[in-house]
Length: 150
Image 1 (cartoon, rainbow, N blue to C red):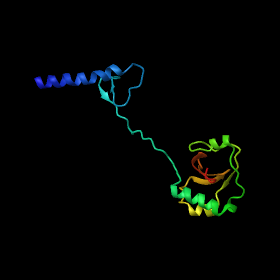
Image 2: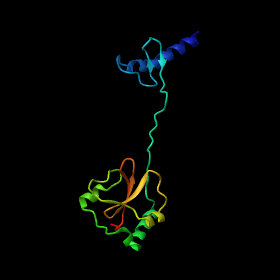
Image 3: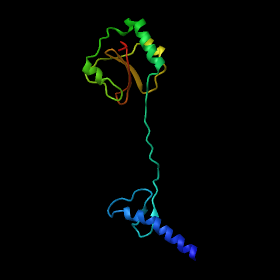
Image 4: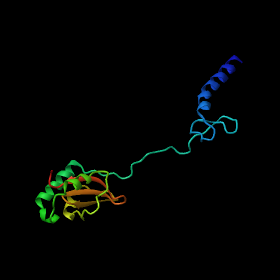
């Protein structure tokens, strides 16, 4: 009897903070007591929330060196490259969209062949003097290599 009484008091003491946090008219957070029908029911989320970064691509150090070497050994494959204006060059960065008005060309096939395979959903483009890994679906820059080596 005494053990039952101690268990009951402990259970009520543990549940008191959950009852104090609930405000009428607000949804009950997952894992808290639901007092809606007078019965203490613990609600548990049906699916755990998971944050997943979909699609990410970075050039490896070997790929960066291979791209620079290929550019210096085969400049004719790239046509005429000119440095981007400083304001535009700052906008060509990871996690940003390619600025409007910048001419982009697909990277030469020879360069693509010397680099590691690019995952589906990404393309390699030349924007000014930069080799850009671009997410095709979102048009967001994933990584950049400055071909002039600056």
